[in-house]
Image (cartoon, rainbow, N blue to C red; front, top):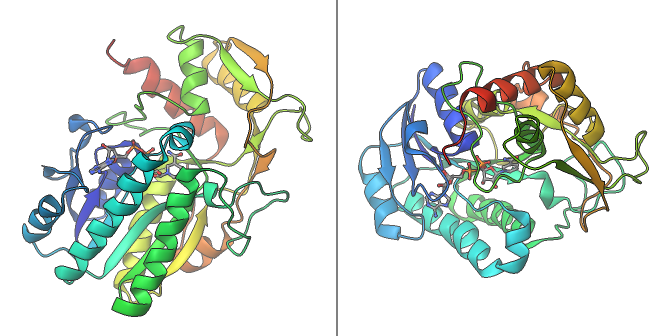
Length: 326
Ligand SMILES: NC(=O)c1ccc[n+]([C@@H]2O[C@H](COP(=O)([O-])OP(=O)(O)OC[C@H]3O[C@@H](n4cnc5c(N)ncnc54)[C@H](O)[C@@H]3O)[C@@H](O)[C@H]2O)c1
């Protein structure tokens, strides 16, 4: 298939491009490089363009006849979204509307969309199934939930088919170290902990030690980025084979606490993670763990790299061998 990948120069997007290329698909990346990296677009041409600019999207879609779009491009900093909601609604929601309208214009009828477990909000029980109430507690989560709704409406009215993948915590890096996680600023636990262990960042702050979990720290479901990438390839196949619009959780069903992550990094790397305890952060639920059985059953989702050691090993190797330039 010929696939347009928005945000394909970013973390999950670049890993997905690698998986798509390996599966024999032809990809084109559309990215404005606001957070992406030119070097990460290795598996097909990069069109530098912004979803805010309808003409640039039209031009990209004019360049060839695409069978589908995978849509990663968005802003994804939860805290920033609280302070600057306008930025988030503009880029994530308006940008997506621009993309969808251009797709309709070009008769491209399949899209795989990066949604998130943040659309569920403050859940009080796990594992989380797709039919849980969705009640985001920040503008970032709202933008993703709005897009899920827009996609359902666009299917109903225009026959645009979509798969919305609700990722839990994306983690780990390419085993060949061709690409990796390079966010600036970096909001995610595993890179922050590894960079602290490597002496490149201050001691890790563990937010909340009094949660109702076995060791008091918050529990999350970490899914290796290579497994996420494969799920996009499978989603595209599913749509191409006439699959219906749907929403799917992507996680492992196993939860690990922040303390377990810190301990495993120390064990795997032989380097302890300097850390300090801090109070809970507002809006962090005690536990977020996916039930991904629907994705397994319908998409063939089958995570094979998401055991914690593999996640940590690949992340450690990436960050140790590919220091971010100062
Ligand atoms: N990383 C996670 O754990 C996680 C979890 C849930 C959902 N998501 C979602 O997955 C997607 C990818 O996340 P990521 O961690 O790879 O982020 P990322 O920042 O590494 O990648 C996003 C890419 O989109 C590009 N982009 C942003 N706005 C654009 C625009 N207007 N036009 C063109 N390109 C634009 C950026 O330059 C970047 O390359 C995002 O939509 C995010 O909300 C990520």
